Image 1 (cartoon, rainbow, N blue to C red):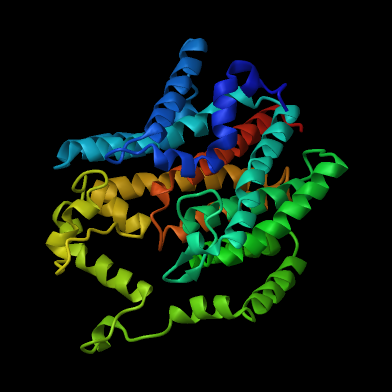
Image 2: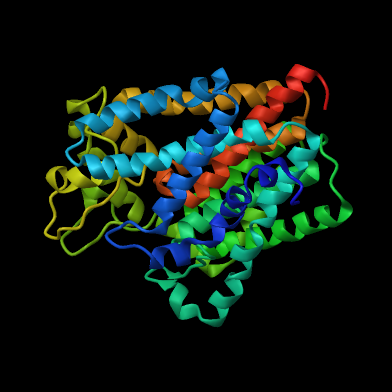
Length: 406
């Protein structure tokens, strides 16, 4: 593994990316006023990306700009309108690191050996987060929330761990099913074991949107590549619904009154609450439809359009509402363009690797579906892995298409 181009360029960058999934507990201990060593790691990754670009004499491919360019430009413009520019700039800097890890794949993954290394690299990054689960079972108090026992892994929130498991599970399936890489029998066995453990852990995170995301991945794979997986998926869903905690989380979505039927003393379930918040934000969105109110300002204005007795502020818990509020419809459109271009790229790659391309298309769709009920752009550690994986497949598929061989 240490013979990779990535390690040859910078062992620091290699270890940052590999261990980032395991660092949240440590980084949270260093936070003072919301800023800690995590911010330093973000800066380090971005600076390393700039260094790589300079090393290449700034011969930056058009694809660096074509995929992300409009979203980055609109985001920077929206910061000018923000009433809290420091918070907006700090939050938007996270997006710059997503772009950085996406683009770094272009420099470090040039051939099949690099590709095989990268897939092993990401899958094996899950060893520590998954291993930490055993400590949660030994000391369940630290993982018990008002929703019951939920696995955190090595992440700061069960949702982040859950989406990370969706990514790891999808990559494990890719390693097993793809026909363009040749992995060792031992690694394929490891991938199968990690996949099974990931699915079990995913159920125990109790993150419903991540459950749906995994269903989307397997459904799209079954629809486009192997229809028998639709039967496997149906069976898995039925078996999962036999678990009481899974039943409770699923049925909670449909329980309780709607906002229109709410009586005194009753409360809304989390989904109905979010719909009320989204609807309440619409007038503010419509008042600044082009560039929005400024990046990451939804929580800043929350108590203005949704007054409460408490002083608690909330984010949108919907990536599309959040972006429309923060960056206007120009921002939302540019965000959707990123996924459109990725989808077009992998649809073209389908004829080369139909099983692998189906899984990556499923992963893209799952991310977008999850964005309906989660602030996906705020999950930094998960996004580093997601966007590095997207960058890898995007640039590797371009290389394969240009060389007309695998």
